[in-house]
Length: 200
Image (cartoon, rainbow, N blue to C red; front, side):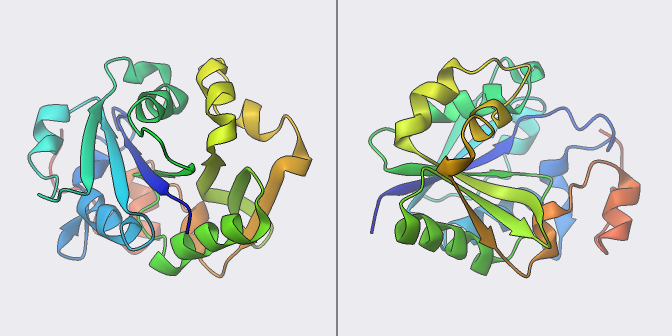
């Protein structure tokens, strides 16, 4: 099996939510705790990238030697800036599987399926897809790390994704969570999860 590192992006300000998304709850866990445990069923190591609210969120990160917390001081530059921070931390890995903190309902089977699709197809990009819609997680082979690090942050990783469709393998899953982007309290309620009770 190839050495794949998970990357969980949780550096944003959560302005539309009015509360740090990483600290919202799914069952008895925070989104961060839940996603970390879920992703670690498919990867050996996980880099969690924090930025806004870092001191508050860092206190809730599970004590696990498989977890590394990285800080993105430039988190206002967007998701790609956080991915770049992670890529500089991961070391000698075959690939990274990137996920977003505001997609907390993704099943562990989905993360596993994305890894298996990568190992089966050898394609440098694997994207989870539900009913024809792209979602997260997205896996990038190390052959694309340089391209990702050089990509303009105002355009995001989609510049690399869309550069050559032949590099992409889709992983079709029965998991609506991959396209449930929870940006506002109303999004959370529609997803059937607990809305924030206090403001940041």
